[in-house]
Length: 333
Image 1 (cartoon, rainbow, N blue to C red):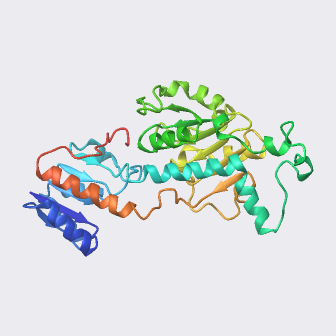
Image 2 (image 1 turned 120 degrees about the vertical axis):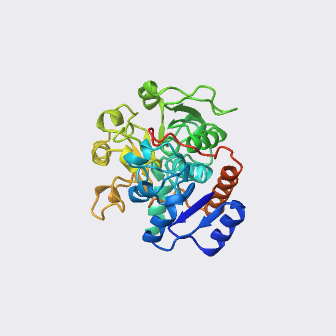
C-alpha cells in the first residue's frame, strides 16, 4: 500500500506519519508534478486533493482532509468518487464553545461596553449611576442597573447545529444554568444535558424563544444565507445572534440592517462572508457588536490534536478498519 502526503509537511510530522504507516509506503513529493506521479498508484492521501490529482489516481481508497470544513475542499469529481473522505472535525469543539461563552458573558454583563469605558477612563454603569440603590437601605426594587445586567439562569440559549461544536456549547451553557434549545437536521440528544434536540422545521420556535442564538452549523448548500432578514426578524428584539459556524450562513447586509433598525439587540461574529471584514464596514462602529478575526478555534492544543487524528486514521487504514470522522460528501459534512 502507498500513502501520499502533499503539500509537504514538516520533518517532525512526516516522521510520525512514517511510523504510524508501518509497512505502508509513504511518499512526500516536493512539488505538484511529483505529486501527480506519486498519486498514480496511491491507496491513500493526506493534504489538498485537486481535480488533477484525483484524475491521475487509479486506486485511491481513502483521503484525509487537513480541515474540518469542506466547502473549499470538495469538487464534483471528488463527491462522485467512491473513495472515503474523513475530515478534522472535533479538534476544537471545546475551544470554540469557550469562545461562545465568552461572547455570552460579555453581553450578559456588558463587559464589551465597560472595556470601551475603561479605555476612555469613564465610570458609568449601564443603567445610570444615579439609579444605583443606596447602601443604607439596600436594593428595595430592581434598578435600571440591575435590568441592564442579565442573570444567565434566566436566559435561554438556542444552538443551530448540534454537532460536535454545538454539543459542547450546549454543555457549557447548561453548566451556567441557562435553558438550552437546539435544532439539527439529524437530531440526537446531548447525553445528560439536552434530551430533546429539535428538527430544523422548529427553527422558528427556537429563534422566538432564545435570548442568545448560536450558529454552529457547517456550510452546506442548505445553510447558505440561512439567516436572512426574515429569519433574523423571528428573533426576540432583545436577543443576540452569535456566529462561529461559517460566514456565508448569515446574510451580512441583512444582519447589519437588523442591527441598525433595532430588530435584534446585538451580534457577536467570528466568521464573515468576506474575510477580512472591510475596514469601512458599519459593524466595526457598532457598540452592540463584538467582532473577532476568525480565532474561535485558536488554541495551543489544536496542532497536537490534528496530528493525533491523522495518525490514528493512518493506523486504522493500515489495519483495514474504518477511519474516524468519515463524512457524507454529498452533504459536505
